[in-house]
Image (tube, rainbow, N blue to C red; front, side, top):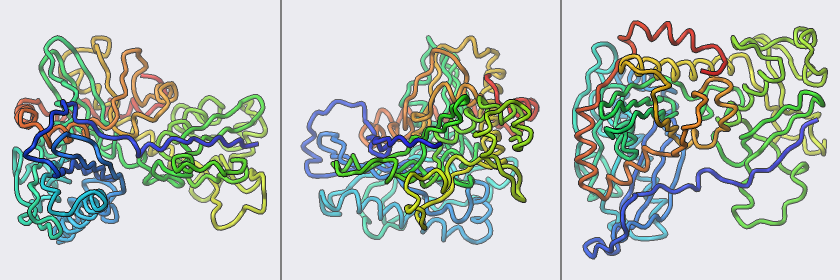
Amino acid sequence: MVIIHNNPYNPEKEALVTNQDNNICQEYTGCYGIAMDIGTTTIAASLFSLADRKFCGNITETNMQAKYGADVMMRIMNSNMGKASLLHNIIITQAEDIIERLSSSICTRDKVIKMAVTGNTTMCHLFLDKDLSGMAGTPFKTAYTGSISLKGSENGFQKFPDINIYVMPGIAAHTGADAVSVICSQKLYQTDKIQLAVDIGTNAEIILNNRGNVYACSAAAGPAFEGKGVKCGIRAGNGAVNGIKINRLAGNIVLDVIDTSSNNGSNNRQNSQDTLIPKGICGSGLVDAIAELLKAGVLKTDGYLMNKKEALKNGVNTSIAERIHKNNEGNYFVFYEENDLYNKQQYSSRHKDIIITQKDIRNIQLAKAAIQAAAEVLLETAGITLDNVDEIKIAGVFGKFIHPKQAVLIGLYPGTDNIEFIGNAAGNGVAQALFDQNFRELALKYSTETRHIELASEKSFQDKFLNAMELKKW
């Protein structure tokens, strides 16, 4: 039996903040600015009134470049094979479209006069139409260093040619401006603290502050947590399963499904069991799925999903074991199917079986292993252990919505009491850069003073990565 709970919260409604006072600046009365975080998989942008730093709205959507590769290496390859201009035009067109949608009901185009941009190094290069040939292999070299300021017309903007664009500085070829945004917005340079931060995304940025000595690296976590590369993966939004529970005794499954209708003031929904049909699983739901399968006894810590016969032999409830099936790609577990519908007449093109496959599980393992191993390399380089860390910060929109106990169980991050979930820290950083010249100078400082660790050159990384593949607590 499957029980569906509707979750009325829409994570995309969360606003970026500038952490500045709201003194009115007469110079900018009636003018607006854009803060944009360009990720490999997702673009997040916010509109602000420049006079009083008031947040006016945001848009989060899939990066349209994704059709040319799910990760940065594929984008680099495509760029170097003659698609550089195409990829640049895609991101510029999308950026202008986002700006127009955010501002059209608020002001005329000429009133959007400033834009601050952050992102990983590859995305910033593509945004600026910079040569990526040096980033295809070792020694990785960027086409530029530091921050860049230019007019929209100089960067290919047509709708907003006079907008003043500022692109934040990055650290290295694969540790970019988004890491700098996190460092500066979270003050990960304080001399009286040891801090570890993980910004979970397609490229996970891991940052360690050892009492003022800052280390950073980037791990290829893949797009699974953002709904890509997973059989039933979707971005967090209406119809996405963002929470899962399995009752091991009764065999029931409880699915939390995001329902945005309540955000529109709708009170006319019938019983959610009849009307709310899951469309797929988002990142937090995937973490729950892995954790619950472990607890149910059908998933081993090495990532192997048992078949039905093995599960029954292992003492698994029959109702749970019967949800395990096999196809030519291996075993898979069904969380939701036609037989779970309360109203069978609902079965239509809208309906989709919600499953997790052996391949999906491996993708999550690879992501979590990359993050854990990268963090361990930074700690080892700094000569400290996890026990020495005063604060652990989990950044990224996805990171804020995962269930902590489930994430700790599978080893996505360590199980300690000093973890803080800080949301889109990179987005908050670029929002501050939109307004504050001092923040821009701080970003430039730590783009050069942060010690970058290239994981590909670290001999211990591969061993740590293989050990971290196991689905267990750190």
